[in-house]
Amino acid sequence: MRSWKKVTRIIVSLVCLLVFATLSGYVLAAEKIYDREKENNNSPDTANIIELGQPFRGVISDRNDSDCFSYKAEESKDITFLFIDNNNNPFTIFLIDKTDNNKIIKQINARGKVVYEFKEIFFANHEYVYRVSSSVSNANYEMSISGTRIEDSLTLKGSEEMEYNDTVRSQNILPREDILVSGKIKDSDDQDYFKFEAEETGHRNFIFYPQSNNDFFMFLCDMTEGRYIFEGNISTPGKSQVIKYNAIKGHEYRFFVTATGNVNDINNEKYLFKCWKQ
Image 1: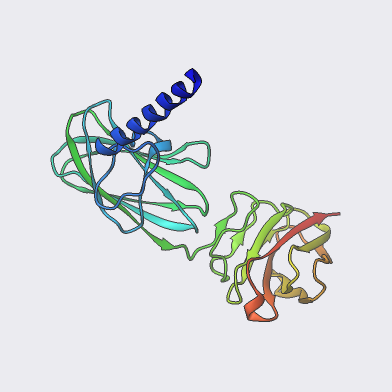
Image 2: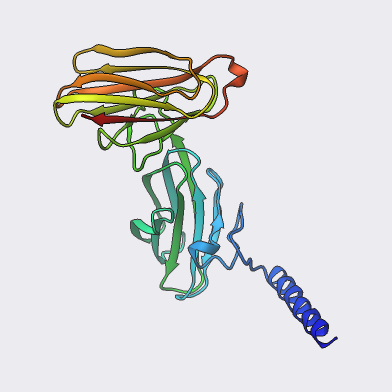
C-alpha cells in the first residue's frame, strides 16, 4: 500500500512539473517555432527548430542567457543567414555543426543597426545550430535563414552520395579514388554523377554492387581522353558488375548510374561502388 502511494505521489509530481513548464512558456526539449523563440533554448539539445524562409524574433535576457536554433538539412544547400539588431547591442553568434561533434563553423561579432549576411554550405543529413548571446540584458534581435539548391560539384565528406548530384555540373567529387561509396536512386527521374582522379597508373577493378532487385544503367568514362570504358545495363538483380581497365595517373574519370525498368517500381534503389587498385 505504501509503495502504491509513493508511486502515485511521483506521478502527480511529474504531471505538475509538465503543467508548470507549459504554463510558464518553457519547453523541455527541442520545439519548432515560427515567429518567436521559445525558452528554454539555451543549449543545442533544446534548440528551437526553425524552417527556411521563416523570420522570427528573440531576446537575450541577460549575459548568462543564450538562444539556440536548429536546422537539419535534408539535402545539401547553400544557406544565407540574416541577423538584424535594431538597438546597437553587441551580439556573438556561433554556427555549429552538431552532427560533426559540435564543430564550430563560424563565429561573428555583431553590433549596430545592420543586416549581417553570410553564406555557408549545409550538407545533407547534418544538423546545424545557431547560438546567439550578448553581454547586455534584454537585447532584442531578428533573424532568418534561407537556402537554395546547390548546383556546383561537392566533394564527399564521407562515404554517402550528396544530393543533388543529378547533373554533370553538380556531380559528387570523390576525395580519394578508392573509397567505398553508397548511393540510391530515389525515383525514375533521379540519376547520379560522380568524378574521381587516378592517383597512380595501373590496373583497376571498378566494382558496382546493386543493393536492390531493380535494374540499373551505368557508364564509366575517361574524361581526359574522352573515352567510354564501360556503358550498359545491369539486369541481374543483386549481382555485382566488375569493370577492368588501366588507369592513368592524373586522368579524371566519371561514373554515372540510374535505375531502369517500370517507373512505378523505382523507389530508393540502393547501390555501392568502389574502385580497387591492383
